[in-house]
Amino acid sequence: MTNPLARRLPYSARSIVYDLLDFTPFEAQKAPLADVDSFNIVFAGGVGASKTEVQEKYLIPEVLPDSMRSVYLNLAGIPIDWNGKEVRKYFWLVSPDYELQREVFNRLVDDLRTLEVRLDGPNTPQDGSWWVRIKDSGTEVSSKSANQTNSFHSKALTGICVDEAALVPDFVRRERLIPRLTRGGSSDPWMFASGTFEGMGGMANLYDIGQGPNEQGITSYCMATWDNPVSFPNVTEETKDWLQWYCHKLPGEKELIDQTIEMERLAREALVLYLALTSMPADSFAQRYGARPQRPSGLVFPEFDQTRHVLHGLTFDPEREVEVWIDPGVQNPYAVLAVQFRGEIVEVVDELYYRQSSSEEMIRECIQRPWWPKVTGGQIDATQLEQKTVWQRSELWATRGLQPPYLRAQKVLIDMGIERTRLWLRQPVTNEVRLHVSDKCPNLIKEFGLYSWDKMRGETDQFRAKPISKNDHALTALWYGIVGKYGIGTGYEKTGRRTMEYRPRFPTR
Image (cartoon, rainbow, N blue to C red):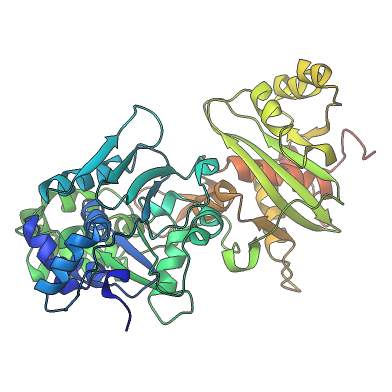
């Protein structure tokens, strides 16, 4: 028989801990807190849906020393004869940066002190990782930043809590976190990922997988903003049902005219929700408040499909040449894509994507990447002549003994760049995919899922013929490169000033 102390505490024992902490779970919180069988638990919550609290309350029973856990098991009617031997365990709190998981950490320390657990620490420097250790068992909880994976040491972990999981790149979860959780035997490792949906990214995909049987051990749950009775005590069940209908139906402006009574009732019961609902698109409200993943309406690249275009394990091939496709930026993100080719198939194997960066800083970063020795040339925005000059004449080339890359530069109209990129996403006759993106390019993937046409004011289903000028920096670098490498194709008629006949300023060498 498996030792119950080697497994996660069942909910009957957890509830004893929660009573001691004066914590009563909301109805929508009970299911994820009671799930002690799933390997990967995904908890999606709307804004203000107490996601941080649920994550911390899932962790606290597992951090406690076995001397205390055995007591709670016996009180729950699960006989356990503890042998007096404590097992040391390791847990991580992971988020996009060190700041975001500090609320979870502080809640955890407060609860441990409430339960009178003897602590070593906590150690909370102004910058970097925080940690706390249980004196009786040596169990340790430390915080990690998904942006600094070099700190992910090869410890075998018992549990990982991922906060704001929608902002953590999928390859970090799959390649740097999952391998730390040793499955099988008497161990019971787990991952609890929570957050608010941000487009159709990795968390949304995990949520969809977890809604049915799967081989990955994923189970997903959600909690809408209005399911928090503390924040919204006056929201009736009738209004909740209507809000669920709204998030499922995504009604347009004309349809809402027939919902005047329901809208007035929502304004009386929860003015904050009413203001949010009336000030943002329906799909955005459904995602951020209803905890329902949404594919943004009016996407510029509806052909993009993560299952077809994102390749896990796509890495730099040292046998092939590399081009760098560049969209300079200062206040906006500065994007550099490392690209390889198989005939007309474009493979984006790496990206650099930084704000507040100069061309000199980007060059310094690029030449440290393993693919740089294979760079033969690339493409840059023709309007950024100053930045092109920096790339060609930087002092770094002389000091490092390197040759600058040969950069093509030509003006690419937005509509032409979009059209050519869509053809590489899916060839309309053969359905062939000619663009593959490594999962190590999270910003390019994210932009594909967010870049959308500008919606016309006062109309819910009409879009302008111009995209919204954001979420397009890595995409801009991509279409610069595609047009510069392969041209604009054939069969185009001249259209006055908007004509862009493909004549490379610099022929291929």
